[in-house]
Amino acid sequence: MRTLCSSTLIGEFFVIGFAALVAMKDPGLSMSTVWTVSGVAMLLCVLLCGMVTRPGGVVLGWALQVALIASGVVVPLMYFLGAVFAALWWASVHFGRKVDEAKARHAAQAAQAGSETADAA
Image (cartoon, rainbow, N blue to C red; front, side, top):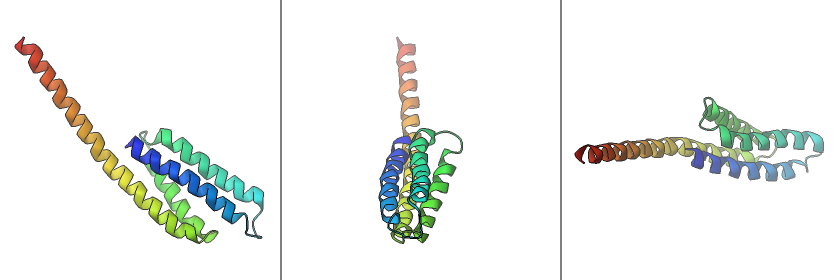
C-alpha cells in the first residue's frame, strides 16, 4: 500500500505546485498566501508518504483529497484534478491493501513450507 499511496501523493505534490503557479495570477490573492497554503499542502504530501501505514495516515490522505477538490474554488481545473486524485487515492488504498494481504499470505505459506521441510529432515 505504501508504494501506491506514495506515488499518488508525489503526483499530487507536483499538481499542487503547478496549481499554485496558476493561482498566483489571481489579483485577489497575495503571492505569500498562495505559497503558504500550497507549501503546507505540498509538505503534507511529502510527510504523508512516510505516514501512510501508520494509524490515521489514510484518513489524513482523505482530508488532503477533500482539500484538493475544494481548491477548485481558486483554480477551477482543480475540481477535476482533485476528483481524479481522489479516485487514484481510493485505488491506491484499496488495491494496496489487497497486495499487502497477498504478500502476507505468500510469506506465511513460505514460512509454513520451510518449517515442514525442516521437520522432515
